[in-house]
Image (tube, rainbow, N blue to C red; front, side, top):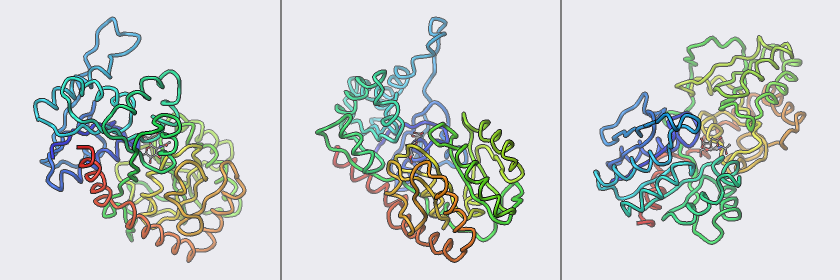
Length: 370
Ligand code: GMT
């Protein structure tokens, strides 16, 4: 097939998922055209001859000074051009805003079938806002295929946007060869503590990173040789660092910024910690599980489709700090429990989220659309 895939180039989940699907399709021999405004994160260290990268031209003009270049139109033009030039069979857009609208426009010109995968904040945060809702609702109801990443999200989409249309659920793909248990931790920074927890996110307010620091400070009171590795960048990183200072645990918390390779970091951890108030799937949860690392996460959104309580980690009620702390302590005290939860986590990822399997499901969905 000749497939055009659009995604964000950043480390956010939808960009990683879109690029991972593109890579698997390319490996299967499909002709993939990846469209974005910069080189997608995974393609900064990997290239495949079947993937052609097309960058959207951001043409600005003094009159646009206050509103920025109209990206929706610029992306629509690029999608239409590429579709015609390469005679694409299908356009697949990851994250509905704004390029879902661009693809809808490109279809008016080229008649190419359009598929959208809704990922998270495009629906549960932005899409429901009246500032976006009329157009996003119309587009989601008009495109040829609509998918999303969990049953929770399917329900959100069905009730708030697309009541009577078919919605496919396709879980996030995990590269189980990249995310795996390794014996040595080849980190490019020094792990100071014997046991560690890890958190990976974009530090947006919905990730609740200060709550993680606060809960961890309770653990330090009982376990003086424990560390917390915070990976990623975003608006609440500074606030989280300041809190670590205030709580006098700065020596225990390493803020690592964005990392190219996460496997060695997951492998240093007794658990991956999450405190998100919204999470449609939780890509990093599944990545950690693939590395045999248990996950502790709140019961929100699609989290319990990934994580099974007491099977491969622990689920707690959002904001319930005591339970969160108790689960961390349980894992520090009981290594055999930590190991067995970790092993079952990998089994689940191999059975349900393995990248080639998920990509084949995407292909079946494309065939249905065509
Ligand atoms: O919405 C975000 O904050 C980022 C977003 C994205 O699209 O970059 O991530 C979402 O998509 C991921 C891939 O499908 C999911 O694993 C994440 O759970 C989801 N994030 C949220 O729902 C907050």
